Structure formats: structure tokens, C-alpha cells
Length: 143
Image (tube, rainbow, N blue to C red; front, side, top):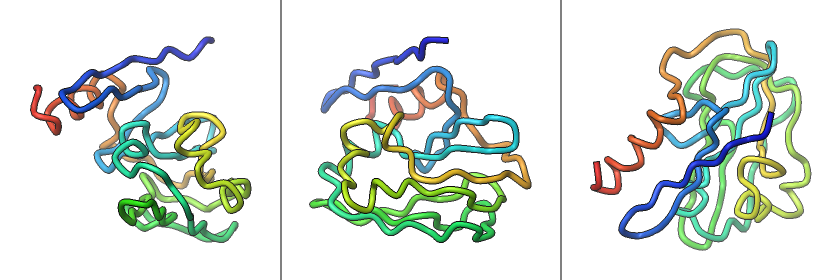
């Protein structure tokens, strides 16, 4: 399956949303493959942060609860947390980000993934791409 990207145009920019992912209201994307969930931040979030210069990654095998901080991103503009969208155990972190955190800016939906969790719970508050697009529009004052 070819990933389909949808562009949201606002007064201040364009943001890409992948149609095959799920999203949170704190701008994480989620890809589910069995009981392993890959998590990253959206194009919208990385563009709001601008140039990401540092990341604090969690330890593998750490148990996390929905809503806990998974990682902290530092950009030239701000510091932002990445939150767990569901309960789970961290099974992998993207070690490349330690050396090149700006990969998130270049490829937020691909090489810029942040962590993989083995899920122990499902979140009912995940949005489909169409809902996330509408969420961005409302935040940008065009919905």
C-alpha cells in the first residue's frame, strides 16, 4: 500500500497528514502493527517546533501509562514533550535521533519515528486522518 499524504493549507502554512495513521490531540502519530505501536510527531508539530536540535529518549523496557511523557524534544523555538497514546512497554527507540534529531523535521512520518511500544491497552481517543485534519483547521482558525 502506498502511503497517501493529504495537505492541509492554512493561513500560515501547509501541513502533511498521512491517511493510514492514527493521531492524538497532542500531535503524535500512531501506526499499529499487531501489538507493536510506532509513535512519532506529526508534520504539524515539527513545523510548529521548527528546527529540532535535541531529543531525550526513554529507556527500552520501561513501562509507560497513557499520557506519560515518552520523550522530550528541544528546538530552537521551544521544548515539547511527546506523550504515550496508550499503555505499554517500550521495545525500541530510534537511536539515530540522538545524533541527528533533525531527522524528525526532514521525515516525521518515516525515519523520524521516535519509539515503539508493545501495547497493553487501547486508547479510544485516537483520531483518524480526516479528524486530525479538521483538528488542525480549527486550531489554525479555518474550521
